[in-house]
Amino acid sequence: MRILVVEDEEPISSAIERGLTKLGYAVDVAFDGAEALEKAAVNTYDVVCLDLNLPRIDGVEVCRRLREDRFGGGIIMLTARSAIRDRVEGLDHGADDYLVKPFAFSELAARIRAITRREGSLREPVIDTRGLELDPNTNRVKRDGQEIHLTPKEFSLVYYLARNEGRAVPQEELLEHIWDEHANPFTQTVKVHMNNLRRKLNEGFREQLIETIRGKGYVL
Ligand code: CA
Image (tube, rainbow, N blue to C red; front, side):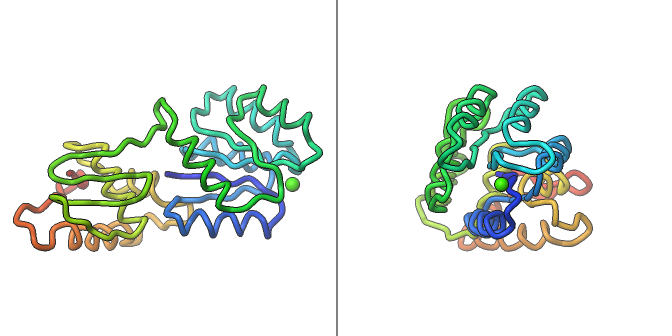
């Protein structure tokens, strides 16, 4: 899951970024409305957390343009208590939800979970396949009923492969969906996490779950 945080107040945006990264999300940050639209045009986000009072292009306008460009992810507005009119306008222009500042980080995390659980292309179902049980709401993994402890990144990897079961997923696609824009495509990042994931998933089992197809990618 990849999230764009749009917030011009650096202490707030970096606190949100840190918190969401800890929960296993890939997070990008934009500091004004124009930068937000540029990033949304080139990256695929599941959720945008959008401050309404922004330099260059304000949040309501960002919201309107995102939906005009057929952005299909969730939009959560971050607003001042007094900005009722903006909130209403934002909701009218396609925002899904809002939070009034100051808010507790746990509340933002809960709203993000709620939005991504909703019906539609963004819903993240529990997956049960090949003896593996993957619950994206709790990040819990079981293989043949036995619990396996994965890091959030490892969970995102195996979940993505499971959603694309039977198809070889190229490394670049995994980078695009699971890492943020700071990931260097020329490093061994994916490989290293994949090796750890495989070690944990396969330990004590005869069948090896993730295959590497040379030149094509990884397949579950
Ligand atoms: Ca602001």
